[in-house]
Length: 110
Length: 112
Image: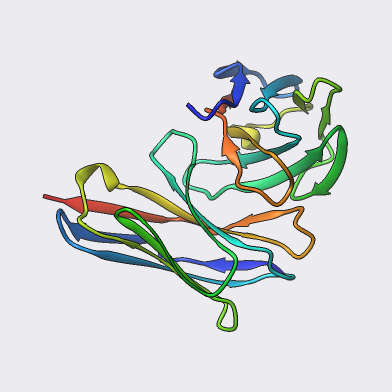
């Protein structure tokens, strides 16, 4: 079956660093994506990992371990505008189907 | 702006009715995906089309159907609507079926 787990909610302080974890069990793997979604808006692409290791893009970094079925999204120098849901999604074995996790709602406090 | 357009933005209808949601992908994108997002729920994959052909089906009800036309725009048809069908319906497109998806602004459907 397909299963992706993320913490439901997280809270952090402006200027801090937060790590959002994602574990997955899917029928095959062709890449893992992170999306940001503000309430009532469309998800927007943040990062893509297909090989093990860390991908850095500005304040955001994403890590993947395929052997552990694990990824995390690291957000540095948090800003109030980073308050949103963060969705982890896995592209399945045939590259046809994206399986999205339930999302982690991040609240950034002043 | 992702370049993906969806119409209408909002739709209010009654139970038992039928509606059609429309999606125009980014220029050059061949893949179109449809998702449903209910209140406080994650994104549920419905269906994927690539260059006019259906490639994958997710949790799509039999009352729902979709198609992708030769000009690559796509329509999602929802029939015999129920209260539980009230949700945000997103369309996303990508250049190929293993590429990053770009989401449209969504259609908010309310079934009364």
